[in-house]
Length: 476
Ligand code: ARG
Image 1 (spheres, rainbow, N blue to C red):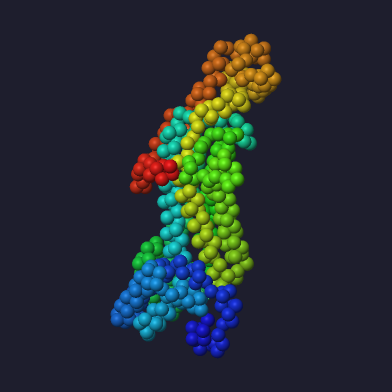
Image 2 (cartoon, rainbow, N blue to C red; image 1 turned 120 degrees about the horizontal axis):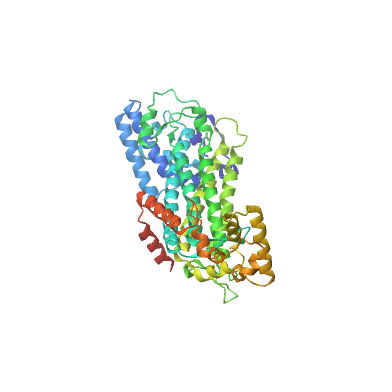
């Protein structure tokens, strides 16, 4: 930092290593659009309050708009000796318009300024990520619609457990993603208060109109405590925690795509556009995108940990440590956004193999619960019904048979309650259809959920079919 930048207190320039170590402009220049919007709102308010002349305000606004244009066109020269985005923009402004530029910072500190910028940036990022989640939901809604009649094994402990519908399985992820979306928007709503006017930590002696700058920047109101406003970053923790949750959900989807596209499962074929080959083994078609979605989740969890550890133990209020909030926040959003897009494309182009899923229902005694429920419905206490079913599984297993391949006599040897209708109960379609409570996999239930999801998406302005079609075409 040159002597001039810090003014009267300093004689010596900053050490080169210290400067390189402490500059943030290399990453916080991403905040330039928010920084300029904030400065324009602040300048206009200073004008309204008679703190700046109308002429100064006009020069400031015009100068900032020119700088914004330069930045957008990539013509602006970022100077690391000016530390951060705020100082870079302000000194460019002063170089351009003189004293008026030097008056912009009246009643403001970089501490409330950076708090404002980060709230604006993160609020918008939360909304943009929520919109990306919606696009993935569109794909899932359509794929679920295609998969209503496809039966597959549901798993616990990765063991075949009970039959479900493919649609039901896909809708499970929709539930998770809709919660992720809700958490992001909730965080965006809570952070949407303006810290401008809180100054460095203790407000300002100037008679600012905090409500006016808040309104101009689309905030719902102003923060209530100046120390808190410049001294906390919990709003970032909230947003990144929501992202970490989302990344974990996407990672589990990724894991299932990896598993399902293996020859062992064979439940899905990924499109060429979202797989890669091997440099050595010509037969390979690797689900790299799904693997990377799984792999990248670790980064987002790391970003959350970075933020929380950065904050832990900081005395009030602002501390320079807080400059370290930006890389993890940007990285978490960039990573989750990329994962959402890749997952939407992967699923849009994936081909589910209904035959293989069907076949997987035959072996594994997924109908054993039906036997227990059948006996229990006939008056057998559930625990002993469970026991009888277990003995029949063992009998069938020992003879290399499925349960429906046992004779009625073999079953009646275990319980007199068995009748011919047990064979109907063992049918997989019947087993799924009988699970018709809210939240269950029966066809009508699943269809209601698909329709409800589609209406929610359409109410949010999304053309579900068009988005899924487009992504599907891109994925080919
Ligand atoms: N670059 C700083 C940051 O991101 C801006 C605020 C600096 N404030 C200060 N008093 N040094 O946190």
